Image 1 (cartoon, rainbow, N blue to C red):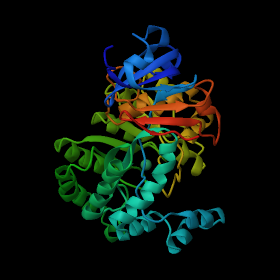
Image 2 (cartoon, rainbow, N blue to C red; image 1 turned 90 degrees about the vertical axis):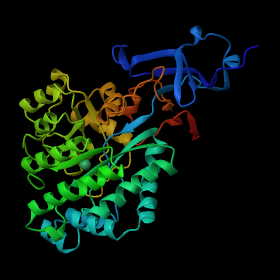
Image 3 (cartoon, rainbow, N blue to C red; image 1 turned 180 degrees about the vertical axis):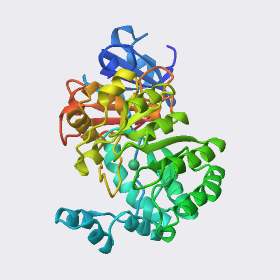
Image 4 (spheres, rainbow, N blue to C red; image 1 turned 120 degrees about the vertical axis):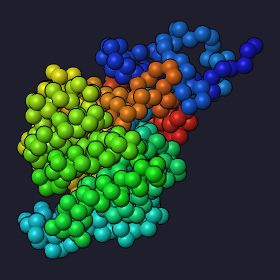
Length: 412
Ligand SMILES: [Zn+2]
């Protein structure tokens, strides 16, 4: 008898492959999926398996009729940070003004201070604890931004912590340098000088370190102007780094179009994005990353132009935006629910938004759908139909996760 050629084989599963053009969810029922090394080797109907399962793979897992999806991808987080802002949340709910919150030590400046003061190991420990919940929900790739150091060495420290997370936990980490997140207090009144620092010192240091997969910026009335963002993106592009942008969250500054002009991987938030900007995004395929957790937490009234994205063929991803100030979100599944309920995405669009389209938003062509040759990042769910992933609020039906071909957990 020939020796098995596959490392593992999942039988009796229903696949939501998310492959485009393959019908709702790219579904294949009564299916099997084979893994060789860190790749998907084969998938199809059980009836089409080329032999008896035990002869085909060294390990056979019975999925017992459960659904399997691509491992989930959270394409926008600020997972690494010092301290938290729960006290500020309490003060604001009690009616405190912005100034009172700031006087009490709140605001982004407090996170910058806590992040600068924390050691690399301390930042790693708190980020690892926050990551745990995402991993239990089937997340196999997560993006992590810098942006609370706001000084060269502190930004590099954050990026090193993000990389180390991917070394010590079974998850792929994509990093983004977000030096233009906020103005550090020592540069108050000298925003131009800080942008000089980002362009002349931070970006070259980050590029040389190899610690960042992309460059991000916060283009907003309360942050950096379109002109400053353009300067930063010009330098980033010259250094060979892809860009993405926090854009049009509180006002329409044309940020999404600006990003698209640089061939950005994604433009994120987009509550106020104009019809012209939506059209601009369609050309280079810039992904619209929607962040319903921040929309909810800030109690925004303005919703992103989802119908316009659909009409223009702009891919839509959704993400947790996990951060201490505007989205203390530790559940990507909850974002599926919020994307459906707040933004009117269909459950299928919501699932595509944390698989296929999230992969595009990170420029990762080797994951996000189930197909031969793709990374074997898989999640197995105790559900009757895929829509349940967006339907339940606060339920985690994940029963197994495979990350890069390795079965990493099987919760009860
Ligand atoms: Zn963000």
